[in-house]
Image 1: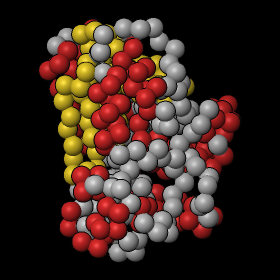
Image 2 (image 1 turned 120 degrees about the vertical axis):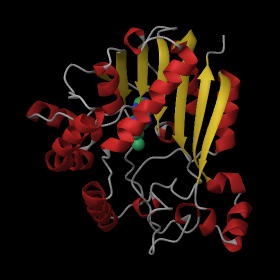
Image 3 (image 1 turned 120 degrees about the horizontal axis):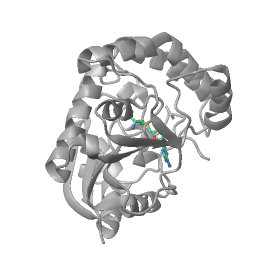
Image 4 (image 1 turned 30 degrees about the vertical axis):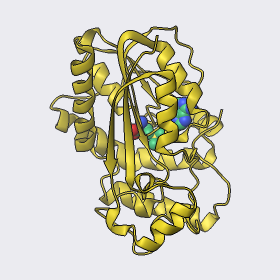
Length: 300
Ligand SMILES: C[S@@+](CC[C@H](N)C(=O)[O-])C[C@H]1O[C@@H](n2cnc3c(N)ncnc32)[C@H](O)[C@@H]1O
């Protein structure tokens, strides 16, 4: 199975710098930010209430790409939902020796070491903050998380009332298969919300220096470097799709009932950069749209 790490064209020194940046981001920049997690959870609950209209403790829910710390799975579990989180990698919120060996086998050695360091340095504080922000103890016991590829799930058709996914689809090569799979396993009265971090956006190359352009723009890496010289490559696998390519796939295979976008970076888009990137086929919308959220119903 393929993980999100990509080993192509990234030097050891870039990897070391990125590890240091990650450390700093966890320590000082709110990488594991419990306040943001709770806000996100409230938004997801809002979609469930507005579009599906059933009590959370009766809902069958699927998270696609629940990540190393399946925080939303833990919160929905706490609220009594029947929730399953899937991810192509082994979650690393609990690390014992056998789990660590499994993490090395599945996620690769480099990612395993990073997870181990994160786990021992930062997870305890994040778990404490999460319980404080939520107002009750949130535990990560007895969660149903499964290692599974979003393009080939093991679920029966019409299984879920609510499917959601946050910043995952940009890592998937065969997005069409994943979207068809969402449509297949969604119940006819259900809803899916798929939020995608768009590659052509200023932060879309996942260069840590540009992850939050409005709050902390980089003084070192030129804007949109990942579409231009690519002098600061990152070792994360991205499918490089544009918003229109996603639109086409979602419209073909599902009923899109709403699309929400978040923009960023207009002040960094000089005329020269825009001309250079327009010549490469990117539109102004591509360059300035950070995320697209597709809210969809099943196409029967
Ligand atoms: C940027 S992380 C987002 C994690 C989580 N959704 C969050 O919001 O914190 C992307 C996740 O997508 C997972 N992923 C990538 N490709 C996948 C696939 N084909 N099927 C399932 N999960 C996948 C990765 O392993 C990773 O955990």
